[in-house]
Amino acid sequence: MTPNKPVHFPLSAFPVVNNCLEVGGQPLTRLACRVGKTPFFAYDRALLTKRVRHLRENLPDGIHLHYAMKANPMPAVVQHMASLVDGLDVASSGEMQVALDTNTTPENISFAGPGKTESELSSAIAAGIVINLESEREMECASRIGLSLGYRPRVAVRVNPDFELKSSGMKMGGGPKQFGIDAERVPEILKRMAQLPLDFMGFHIFSGSQNLKAESIIEAQEKTIGLAIRLAQDAPSPVKLLNIGGGFGIPYFPGEEPLNISTIGERLADQLPKVKKALPEAQVVIELGRYLVGEAGIYVCRVIDRKISRGQVFLVTDGGLHHHLAASGNFGQVIRKNYPVAIGNRMHAEELETVSVVGPLCTPLDVLADKMEMAKGNVGDLVVVFQSGAYGKTASPAAFLSHPDAAEVLA
Ligand SMILES: *Cc1c(COP(=O)(O)O)cnc(C)c1O
Image: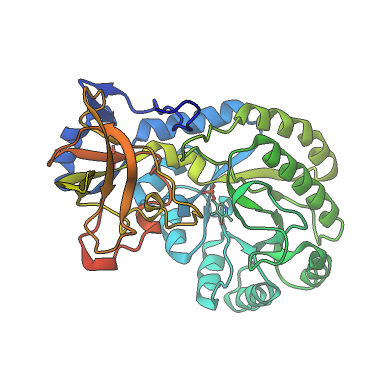
C-alpha cells in the first residue's frame, strides 16, 4: 500500500470469531443458513441499542431523540427503535402506518415531506400526529380537513432556513428548495394560521444530511435555534416543539472519520438556556436516521462466480445495485468510492488480493467494490458490505432486472 493512501476507518462493531463475522451474537454463516437465502440485510439489535445509549450519553439531558424512519423502515427495526427513542418521524402514509403500530404516542410522531395529498393529510389528522407543514396549501388543506372531520390538526411549520448546513452530503435547506416554507415567508403564514382551527406545535428546521463535521453541525444548530426564536415572535401560541433537525453522518469511504458527538453535545448544552428563556415550553428534538441505524447493518451476498478478465479478478455475487444502490455509488455520489467490503467468512485472511465485487445485473454500474484489497474469495463465500443499515433495501431499485428481492433480518 502506498503511504498516505486513504483507508476505511476501522470497523469493530461486529466481532470476529473463528475468522467469521458475528451478527446478533451468531456466526454470519449460521445466520445465512437461518435466513435461508442470500442476499440479505442483517441488522444487529444490540448495536442499535448501544448506539442510542451512546447518543444519550453525549447529548444534553432533556433533548428528545426521534428516529427518522426513511433510513430503515423495516417494521421490526422500527419497533425496536421505538422502544429506545422518544419519537418517530415519518415521510409517507406507509411509514405512518408502521409508526402507529408501535407504542409511540401520536403526538410524538411527526410527518414531513413535500406534496402531502388530501388523503395523507386526512389520515395523519385522524391519527393525531404532528404534521410538518411544507406549504401554505398544506396549511389550508389541513384546516379544511380538520373542520370536516371534527379534529383539530396538530401542525408544525417546516422552515426552509436562510442558511445551509455546510459540508453536508445532501443539503435540504437554504436557497430555493422544495422542502419547507422559506423563513422570510413564515411570519405571514403564522399570522394566517392564527385565524385557522389548527393546533400550532412549533417548528421543524432540517437543513441537511450525512455530515461528518461537528463544527458545521454546531453552527447550523446555533443558527436554527436563533431562527426559531425569531420566528416564534409571530407564532399564534407558544412553541411546544422545536425540531432542530439532525444531519449526523457516518463514515463510509476511505479517509472519512466518525463524527465527534461529544463536542456537538457540549455546544448544544450551551445553547439550551437561551431556548429555555425564549421558548420555555419548547421540547427540543433532534431527528436522526442513518446515524442511529447505518452502522448496525450489513448487506450480505454470496459469491456465485470467480472470473479473471485480462488480469483483473472479479467476484460475481448474487447481490448488487438492485438491493444496495448506495454501495454501488449511484445514490448521490459524484465520484464512485468503495463502501467497506469484506469476505465475512474470511475476516483474518492469510491471502489478500485486489478484486472487484460485482452483481448479476447486465450493466457496468453494478459494482459493490472496485479493485479493493480483501481476502481471496471463492464461490460460496459471503461478501459483506458494512455501513448498510440505512438507505439500503428501500432506497434501491429492486425491480431493475427482475432478480429476487433481498431478505431482511433483525438479529
Ligand atoms: C431524510 C430525513 C432525515 C434523516 O436523515 P439522516 O441523514 O438519515 O439522518 C431526517 N429528517 C428529515 C426531514 C429527512 O427528510
